[in-house]
Length: 231
Image (tube, rainbow, N blue to C red; front, side):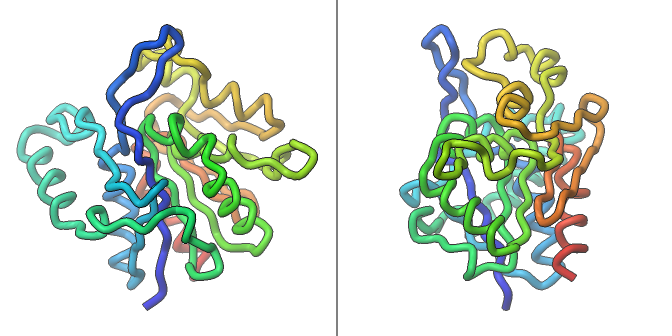
C-alpha cells in the first residue's frame, strides 16, 4: 500500500512576543479531513514529528463550536482516538520523501513553534520539491516553508504561489498583535506569492507540485487537490 507522510507538530505551546505562551498543537480537522480522504483512496498514513513525540491536539479544535455541536465534537475526539498512527509517530529525522507518495503538513499554531525552524523538516521539504514529490500544507502548517533555505539563504519556494492562514484571519482570531511573527507577512518577505481568500472560506492554491490550503475549511478541498495530482 502506498504511503503518505504526515509531518506534524510536537509543540503544545506557542511563544508570544511578550514571553508568555498560548496553548496550541495540531488542529483536529486539519488532520482528520485529509486522513480520511487519503485512507478512503487507499493510502496508508505515516505520522512523523520532531523527535518522534506524540503530536498534541489543540484542545480548542475539539470544542463544540468548531464541530457543529457536542455530538460532532464527541465524534471528532473518538476519530482521533481511533487513529492509531497518531500514537506511534516516527522521528522526523528518519523520514525521506522518496519513501512516500506525498508529504502533508496539517496546521494548528504548533508548526509555527517547531516546524518553521526545524532542520529536518527543511531538508524534507527541499528534497520533496526537488524530486517532484507532491507536497500539501494547510493553514499554519504552511509555516514550515519558512524554515527551508537554499545554500545562499534564499527560499527554494520563492516565486511559488501559496496560501495559508491570513493576517486578516489572525487578526479576527485575536492573536496577530501578540505573535512574534504572522505567517502571511513572513512568507511574503521570503518572496512567496501569497494568495489570500475570504476569511474562513475554503481556498486552495496549487503551483506545480506544491499544494496549500488557507484554513481549516480548506483541509478537505486540499486533500482532494492532492489526490487529483497523485492520480
